[in-house]
Amino acid sequence: MNRHKNTTEPDNTAVRTALWRALHVQVDAKPHILEDEIGLKLIAPPDYWMERPDMKYTRRLRASIVARSRFIEDLIIAESKKGIDQYVTLGAGLDTFVQRRPDFASKLQIYEIDQPGTLTWKQKRLADIGLAKPNNLHFVSVDFEMSSWWKELLKSGFDLGKPAVVACTGVTLYLSRAAIIDTLSQIAKLASGSTLAMAFYLPIELLDEEDKAMQEIAEKGARAAGTPFESFFTPQEVLDLAHAAQFKEAKTISTKDMEQLYFTDRADGLFPASGEVFLLATT
Image 1 (cartoon, rainbow, N blue to C red):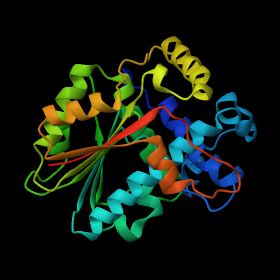
Image 2 (image 1 turned 60 degrees about the vertical axis):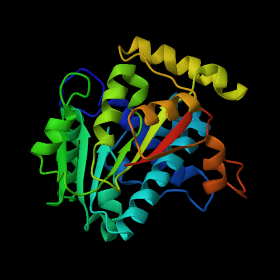
Image 3 (image 1 turned 90 degrees about the horizontal axis):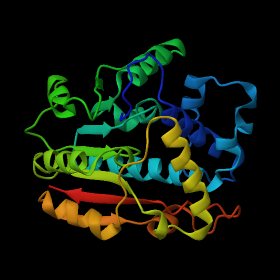
Image 4 (image 1 turned 90 degrees about the vertical axis):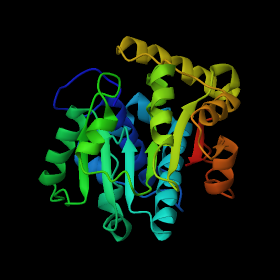
């Protein structure tokens, strides 16, 4: 969503996170936090994909990704049960909630916002594997830094008069502070009763020691790829941003909170990396 390119191919980060979700099912002990192998079918990687360094040596990051996806999924299901019927995902990547959970997804108008290359590729691959796009799924193509995701969302039929759930993961790390502030201000104006779940990333000095080396490698790789990390926040700074945007309520969900939700009493000792904090805010 943040990358400045318009090729018909999925973003590398979107591919990596989809493969991590599949790898969790294939190598981690049950119960699985999330069962999602559809992304693997879309990507159809070479047989040796599990041996990729970004698969083989990133267990804690994989745990973070599946916990993040499960957290968002639990949120949208809970809000759907309350009657919310609009779901917006900023930086949708290769998310497969629509395909995996038609019991809930079919009741929602779902707006997946991401860069054109990723969404064009995704729609083609879904058709290739026999999963045509349902009418209630709207692909909203936009370069998040260069054009208005808000205007494109409204063009896609989003109803401003009704509350919505908005999820944003894997995005703020690549955005300027100004772009993040603008996005929060826009979402805070949604109809009363709307909920935002947005992932932010901690400064390296706040990470657990065992995660710092991996973060340094990731930052170096991002710079080399031309998509440098731009924005890091402490939990208090995240709350300050939410209050400045005038959300009615706001709290943060930490890695420790995620551990309590999804990782207690696991036989395999799987735990998430410490770099991510969620803002959960309501209008």
